[in-house]
Image (cartoon, rainbow, N blue to C red; front, side, top):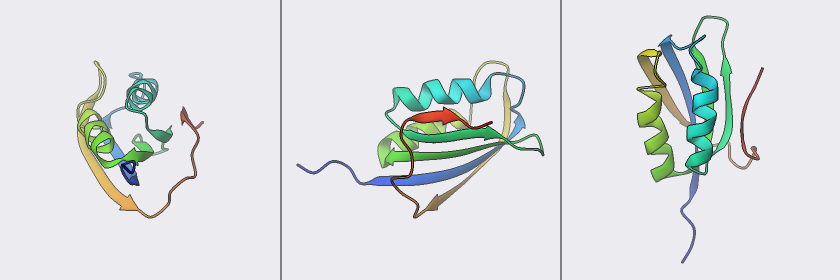
Length: 95
């Protein structure tokens, strides 16, 4: 049996998502789902995420991004699928 094909998701999360532990919670959630990638704050107050892994895990992560951690208020999540693959080892915060 072949492993599920890895895909890469690029997401921009807007709302009250900075200063509420969003990045560190995203790292915990993504690692728990076996995803690789990076999360970072953007200058406009949003959070940017690149996540790579099996489609089912990415779907669960996308659902989490729409809620975020306690204290966050997610207004919108824009997701785009990109061809970039294999560029990450682990899931980390990018400063």
